[in-house]
Length: 210
Image (cartoon, rainbow, N blue to C red; front, side, top):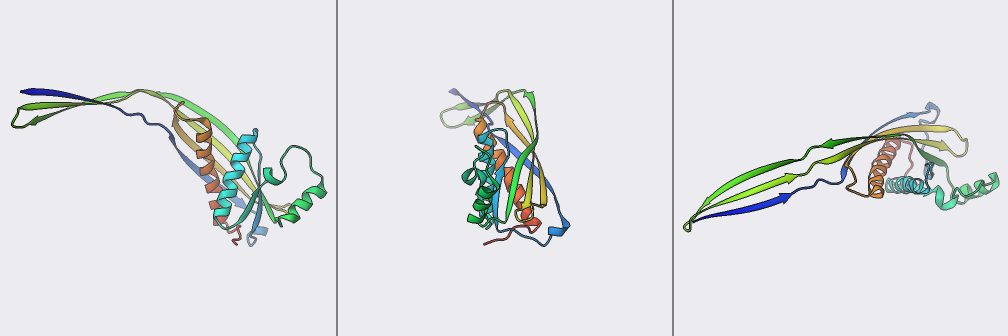
């Protein structure tokens, strides 16, 4: 007796991967400086992107042991603040530095990746007879999008206004086109960017821990 069993499996690869490279420059006059209480200022075209950048950078700075607070929480960009208002806020939180994070570039490439099908036949013999199991593994074609995102983060001394350090990041994000929500992908990329920025500030010994 011969039995044929067909198993069909379809695999979809969703989501993506992101890699971020960071470089930095530090003013030699501030190489021995470190900062313990930092205001994080996002400067992006939309409120959503601004808040996302601030939230990630605040979280990573906090995780490193440095106090950080988002600008949108204490000085939301809804109006022009007077110098006295800003000074009072800085004093209230005893801030000694700010980090301004902003985009520098963005571009995308879209390519079609053809699908493929693999068929495997397995023969099994037992006391009843012989059976053949056919496995079909199929991966459909899809559009793969590669995003290139550039950002910069500038650390400034609040008392002097001096630019202490500038970090520049370049991220490459590869994902299947339209397989995941834009908000989740943006969160994924910003997480990588902010982790690299905080790591670079740590490497340059510019963060003072609690």
